[in-house]
Image (tube, rainbow, N blue to C red; front, side, top):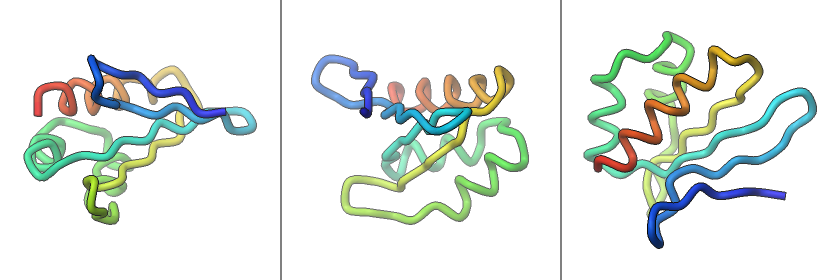
Length: 84
């Protein structure tokens, strides 16, 4: 089961359960990707952002959330998506 956090009709983040964690997925446009690269994110998340594949609907960012500290990156990327 996948849940989506929406703002009006716009999907911000998809949340998918995994064993022992969950996956947060974003489709970021060019402006949001530029903002994500300038944002202070942990080095493993920066690597994911820089290596993400670009699709027609945006660049696909997928983060495994295994610990409470991982939620901060999801919150930052969601704020970037909302702003862009």
